[in-house]
Length: 283
Ligand code: ADP
Ligand code: MG
Image (cartoon, protein in one colour):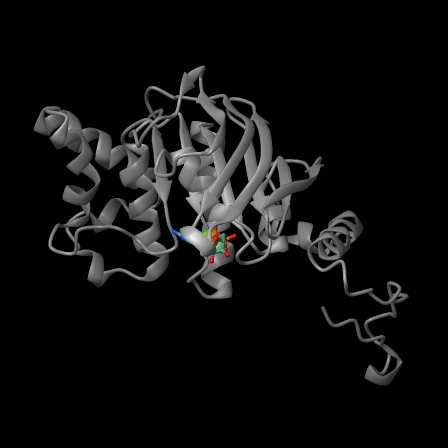
């Protein structure tokens, strides 16, 4: 397979960022003193409950939101507005419904004046990478949700972003498709190694994907813990059944739901034992 060209890996530096949202009496601090350093090529998940400020943080990184205090740099350049160097993928795709897959992927390059042959070559390379080589003439509506998100990833990657910012990109997919997409994203990332900041409220997803998880607390959003994951790569689907995974999942649950005290971990019973003998552990 041909190599994906011009790999870019951004270094992200978020320093003491505070963000206030709302007007007048409704004004509140959505992010409080957030400082994060992300290495080039790192895969970082931001994990936190709904409403804790994850999208606000990503919006600031994307350059869509101004911080009230602090600074954000990507490769030592201040973030002061949106730029294709920072590619965004949301939960719902932003493809043009009237354009075919190939034209959706090439669109950014067309705007930059890249020749038709070059943009088509690059788009085809990326469609191959996201396993959609034979769908270039389809319209988005003819694709499944997972396929649409794969087109979206190709559309972002064609700009060679320094960082990919992903806001719950698989949140609308069913569990099976979601797992496939996580594996595909890891395969793509293993090839391109761009820096990824991936937002999720799903503990399993964060544990499966990340090099490092940053856990956020609600109102005002703060980073309350950093968890470095040493699971080997490539990650295998059965990772989720490992003892270390379960321990870390439990730790994350306690961080996200500090008011709930979890019962002690059950002792494992052999699979052949009658159901009544098995301990129930509902999360
Ligand atoms: P998350 O992505 O973690 O679910 P958000 O960053 O979307 O959280 O939102 C953080 C908080 O800010 C939430 O309480 C949300 O209701 C509020 N919020 C988000 N955007 C705005 C806005 N433009 N104006 C006022 N409040 C907002
Ligand atoms: Mg959000």
